[in-house]
Structures are given as C-alpha cells and as structure tokens.
Image (cartoon, rainbow, N blue to C red; front, side, top):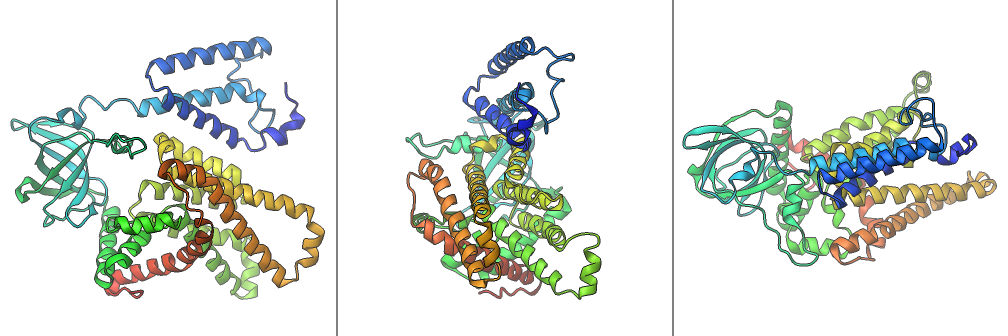
Length: 493
C-alpha cells in the first residue's frame, strides 16, 4: 500500500485522476464500440480486477465501498473507484452513440416525400443562396395520419422569402436523404460530424408552398435573444460590406456564413483561424477585460467604502462575480454554439475557483471543467474545438506553473526588483510570449493532424492579433452592436 505521507504528490488534486479515468473510458468506448459486447467484457474484466485487489488486501466492507476519502491515500488505494469511473465513461459513450431510436425520422430516408412537423431548435444559418435550418421532428403525416417522430433534420431552404427563427413550429414536405461524406483520405467526415449532433437525415426545399409556419413555442427569453442577434446582424451588414462585414460578424456573434474560402485560407496561413470562431480565446479575453475593468472601478471607490467592502469580501471576488453575467450573455447572443458553451463552462469554473480561494489551482479547475463538459456531451472528445481548447489551457497552466517554480528559485532577486517598474513590465511581456509559444507548440500536433499544415508564423501573429482582437475589436464591437439594437447605428463602421 502507498503511504498516506505521499498524499500531496498523489491525490492532492483528486479531480485530475477522476477526469483522466473517465476520459480514458470514453476513448475506450469509442475505440471498441461493439455495444453491448464491449460493456459486458468491461464488466467481466472489472470484476476480475476487483477480486484480485480483494484477495491482495481484503477489507471489512466490500472493496468498492471501502476506500479512503479522495484527499487521502495513494493512487493504488483509489484504483477500484477509478476503475468504476472508467467503466462509467465506457458505458456512457456507447449508450449515447447507439443507433437512433425506432421512431427516428431517419427511418424515412430515401423514400417518397413526406410531410414533417417540427421545431426550429437553433437560429438558422443564412447564406447567399439558401438558409440552413435545424429542425427537431415531432410528427410525420402518412396518408393524412399523424405519427409521432423523433430525431433531428438539417433542412436547406432555397426560397429565401421565408424567414424562420428559433422556436418556430413548421410543417414542410420533403424527401429525406442521408448525409454523405467524400471518402477521400483525410477528408472531413461530414456524415459522422452530423451524427454526433444527433442529425441522421437532411432535406431541401425550394418552393414557397412546401413550408408553413404554424406557431412558435420557443422559450421567450431565447426568442428575444435570437431577435436581438438578427438585429445586430442586420445593422452590421447595413454598415459594412464584403470581408470586413463577414469577419466582424464571425467575431462578434459567431455568424460564419459570410466567410469565403479566400478569407479562411488567409487566416489559416497566418495561424489565426481561431479568431473567426467564438471560442475560448474570445470568451476568455472578454472575461479578462471585464474582470480588470471592474477591479479598476472598485479601486476608484472612496477609501471608507472600500474598507467596508473588504470586511465581507475582496475586490477580486467582486470583480469575478460581476464577470459571470456578461460571459453568459455573450455566449447566448453569439448563438450558444457547442464550442462557445464549452468555453463558457470552463470560464465559469475558473471564476468559481477564485470565489472559493482556489484560483491558483489551474490544473484542478481544468480537470473539473473537462469532467462537466464530457458528462454533458461525451461525444465532445472527437471535436477539434474541444481538443484544442483543453490542450491550450493545459499548456497555459503548465507554462504558468513552470514560471512559478522558476520564480521560487529567483525569489530574492524578485523581491529586490519589485519596485522596478521596468522589470515588472519585462516580466509580464516575457510571461505572455512564453505562454503564446507554449500553446502554439502544444496545439501544433492537433493542427497538423486535422489540417495537414502548421503555420509557424502563428507564433508571432497570435501574440499581436489575439490581444488586439480580444481587448479591442470584440469588446468594443459587442458594445457597439448592443447599442445598435436600440439606435440602429453601428459606431465602429
């Protein structure tokens, strides 16, 4: 048995081994996806391992129930529990990736036209020649008889006189097809991508009389947000044209429908393509901007007021709490894409860590964030946005920890230089550049695997473009957009 004296080195961060065990279980469930054979085999292996551990160290109570608290004991003491978490991950992945339900809309694929009724469950994507609408099926009509249906459909509407919004209940006639991928080596697997979103059928319509809006049952709060988002889009497109409008729409509200291949290729070549999607970098910089702005405002309060506040809490915690609502609002107004919601969860977890005085424990916060995200959506392990976000934050945490260790060695020199303003600025610039290089090197293998290229110029481009976008374009663009909803004028045009 591992000694309790080694606790600090083994289980002082309990969420890390739990998250790793769950993640490995998800990966195993993906690699050996033969439900229910894989689950049965895993349970048998788990039982054998438990029996071996029981024989090696028989407890008074059953071995699954008899393990020390997660903050005590070594990794070996917790092996039975971690194996159980691994089994949970494996089973959960296979449960969610099982074939569609018996009444899924995909059973009508490649048959005659049918009439479908369902709800638009997310804001439509508007392109030049068509609108793409995502519909959650509720009913199908066969020979004038309604039958319940389930599943999701990606619907392309080529008649753009019809404008839909989140929450609309629509009835349309179409022939369902199966999403098809181009089976070229290394090509994007479109069919699998949609399947992970629960979409197993696609359709298209072009005639006006093929679709009918019969009501709206969406949450009124999200309906109003969708209307505000549409108003922002309209104001920006009326004020700007061409690439500037497309880039600003992508950065402010996550609308990437106007981005051309030329724009994407230019950003890809510079290693800054992540700027075009609202993800961790956008939300993170927005959170940092609001946090330090609130800290500045609190610091300007009268001395007596400030002293009274510090009797109950700290300015840092107040600034952290005031950051929560803007981050949530920006996530919703940008369309609440999956990648954006993941980033929001991570930021909220880090804010929570500050509120409970664990702000320096970045690795444990990262593990907690990953655990929440993968519990909500286990299939996220396949998404490049999830992989890049997690690896980026991991390398940020490692870079900061390495800098801390170096600071401990140089502590006498640092104390002597604290009054040196120039030295302080140099330290911050060096830390920023060090983190940028660490993140670029850490994410390079993932970028190379998915995009077959690595833009090394991104090491330099990101150090300039990311802070400019995060501290200037996004916050002031968002503020101008919100004002434009009420005034009709976009001030950054």
